[in-house]
Length: 345
Ligand SMILES: NC(=O)c1ccc[n+]([C@@H]2O[C@H](COP(=O)([O-])OP(=O)(O)OC[C@H]3O[C@@H](n4cnc5c(N)ncnc54)[C@H](O)[C@@H]3O)[C@@H](O)[C@H]2O)c1
Image (cartoon, rainbow, N blue to C red; front, side):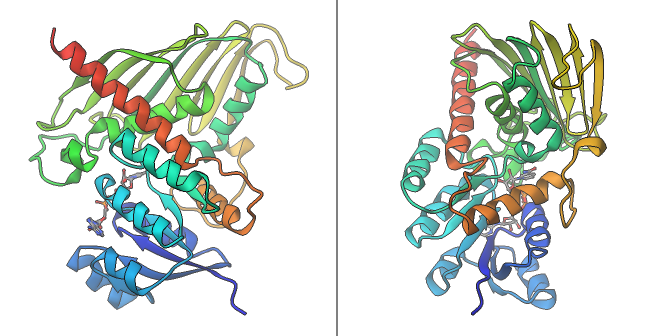
């Protein structure tokens, strides 16, 4: 009997193709169908890939029943695709930012939370070994009581005047730097520190784009006294690749981390974690868990293999569920509302 997990991919652009190459390497996966609305992509797939192709994802859902679906369309389409997958009882991995509205994200979360369907959002930093190590240090109190943090993300996505076409140039479609990259910086904060209680002082800045923001900064406040800031910019040509940076200050030390390395300053040595007083450095090459197939970074493979593991073994709890995706959307909603309030001044 063939026990392979049958996958469909909806949206076969940059992320759809990346995910295809990764899950295709898994011995227990069969990619049976792909849906994309682009005639060019469909022609290419028909020529080179051994999968059923659909121009309309509704037809895919009507004529086939995969076990799992990867949702890689522009964000405003995620809600409809995921709702249809739920009706068909299909496991879902959805790319970030999950949906474009918190209320939609909550509705989908409620739909999945009491079912046995696996649900995951593509916040890939949760699978990066440096950020996993950072979480361990924070949770075990290695830098003492957390007082203050700074979460940043930079990319060179938009570096010239934008003509306003394409989904990234419209907030309704899930474009703009907040949905596209701040979502990662916010999710990292939710993952490492927890969801903030209040948002204040949000600013959205245009650099090249006319219709959406290119940069954003905001302040996050917590009832327990922690505070932090987020600054993101997708129009910074000094970054060749998307880069997340997080700095966390505690009363026992300080951590500075990005996807590639972690520096931790210890006020006093910690024998249990083999950390000396002063600076200690960890590189990803020292602490990574290897993956069977590498594309773009170990974390991209780890997150999809984790999704597959959760389908195979229902006792494994998901590391980035729809609940986590909804939490990020809640913060994004608050940032937009806070900005609207400030924009009146
Ligand atoms: N995790 C990450 O690091 C990361 C990086 C980039 C993008 N993303 C996310 O992945 C998703 C896709 O982004 P992308 O960069 O691959 O975009 P893309 O524009 O390269 O690909 C989107 C694809 O969806 C297709 N599409 C559009 N409408 C469709 C429809 N009605 N039915 C089927 N297909 C349709 C398009 O033809 C295109 O091929 C977004 O949610 C984005 O935010 C995540």
